Length: 155
Image (cartoon, rainbow, N blue to C red; front, side):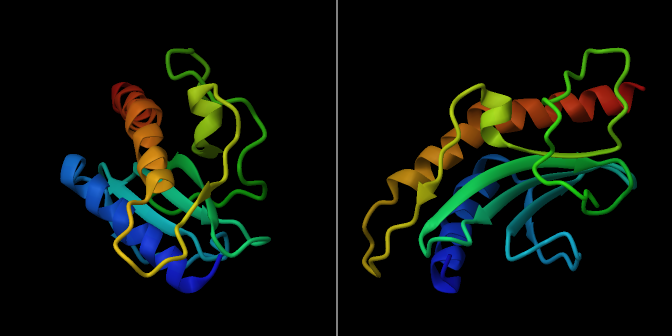
């Protein structure tokens, strides 16, 4: 994805996300596990960090996907495989072994995988895919992450 389109997507997404969920902040994180993603982080406490990522498609210049995840180790998740190939964990289960986890939004929503597009135009044209991606995060990602936080704080 082109740098200017990634920045455009991140800015539009940030405007919507921080308006409704101010606990998430666009963060500059240095990690060998990041490759140009826009990272939104919620620092719940000194251990639990929750993430929403805009992941650019390296094969096209205008597409992205959303990933969500967390770390209970006060850092960006250091995972050798991302997104995780393990099915999304269910927080209510007694065995909740994941200290760190990242998955694509479709693993949480149960819908098919989607690459969303960023409008290449410089004009103020509406961005339906960014809006759709945000709505998916709002409907599926945020409740999932809040369950993870709730479960983690209760343990």
